[in-house]
Image 1 (tube, one colour):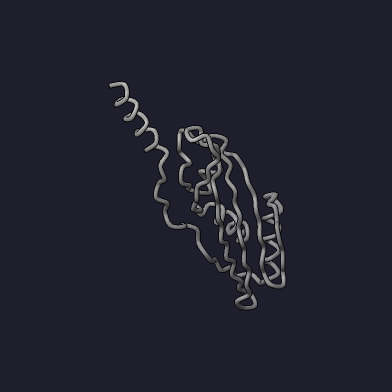
Image 2: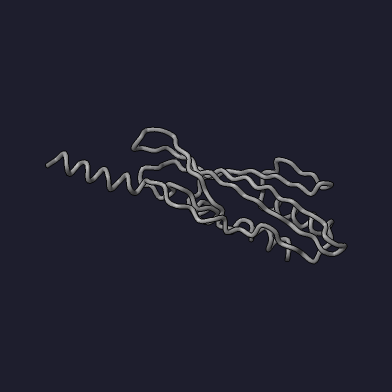
Length: 153
């Protein structure tokens, strides 16, 4: 009886830790602004600086910006990404790693497009298996919309 109860209990808890189906990426891939290239670029860089974003590379001539960051804030995790295993009872010391590629392109004299592609990975210590584990994440679109809104305003 104790063995059966233990198996049922373990099944319930490991079921909570199982992978959840991830939604498709909900972030907009490209947004067009009625601004010239230089103004769009300037607003983007100012926004990233105000957010204290860690810029990995910055190439104005090609319009490419790469940023990376990580954090352990549960609220940011839930705000920016949906991850496999993020609600697992057994996962502690969660850290989310994020990177974004931003591409700015002149369409016309006063029309510029900005494309943001973001990827997130969740990492943490799995107390059940006593190992470090990672989970794939999908952007909620919040980060991207925040950047787009800052450029627009």
